Image (cartoon, rainbow, N blue to C red; front, side, top):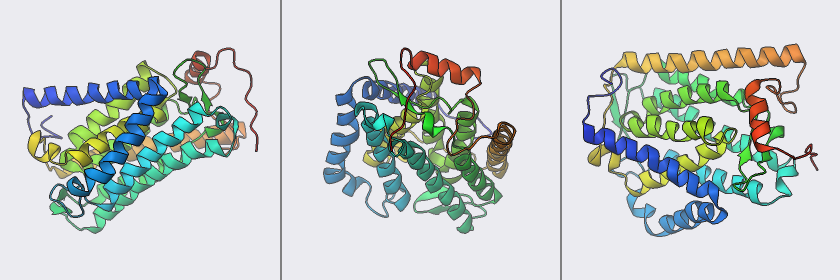
Amino acid sequence: MGFLYEPTSFTIWAIWIFILFSLMAFNEFARSTKWGGIILFFFVPLILTIFVWPKTAAIGNEYGTGTWFNWVKTYSALAGCLGFMAIRYIPSLSKKKWALCFPPLILALNILEAAIRDFQCFTFKAWNGAYVDNLWVMSGPWNIMNGIAGLLNIVTICGWTGIFVSKDKTKDMIWPDMIWPWIIAYDLWNFAYTYNCISDHSFYCGLALLLSCTIPAFFIKKGAWLQHRAQTLSLWIMFVMTVPSFADRIAPVPTTHNPVAFFILSLLSLIANVALAVYQFNKIYKNKLNPFKDEIYKETKAYKQVVEENIKHQGTVHFNA
């Protein structure tokens, strides 16, 4: 804790744990019923957009929520949730190839937004740390390293043609080719991004938020990582936009502002994503696969387990134009 963050209290850890489990609980509420998702990701943000966010997330506010990035990230995450719900609950969409382009595109857009922000933080030239848009940042080579890692993470998005809707009552959007190597590489990249660009907020929007979607993806509903990610991200951003003082005043946990920590996190992120890209492109080359059409990990145990758990008694899916 002392390397990445300043020492904190038991109370702060209790708050962190509460946030983690609250995000997971609301995620389960949203995915378990159609109306739960509609309420959380359509009606609630609609009300907040009209009556709350113009004040709490006003441009240039003292908590840093009034930036282009926060507003774009909020609505792109919500668009992901609503788009995934359309695929889940409109039967014909899950069999349309053009509709299945939406999940990888919205995912790539969200990663690209963050990669651009990393590169932008480098241009601030805050080599010794400074407040920019009311957020503390420290510019350095880590921004470039992690920005490149984010671009590699986009390039390695694969197997979207195999997305289907689970046959159980929750009707989850399942992406079996998105197995654990990609998820881990994403998590390392995204945590490094939050540490680089939202440094003193990363204890929550990095550690807690990433765990809130990774835990369900490994232990609650395998194959639905992107759905978990979109929903928990939307929930967190809506909270931050509504209560912008949370990470700065109510329960602050600042980073140590140690350049070595920044460098090591981004180096790990870059190594993981380079390794993933090399491994993946090697599989594509050896098996003569088309990354725009073929699933890459069909022969793996992780892939087969996800399909077995979610596609029982479902025949082969045929795409329509």
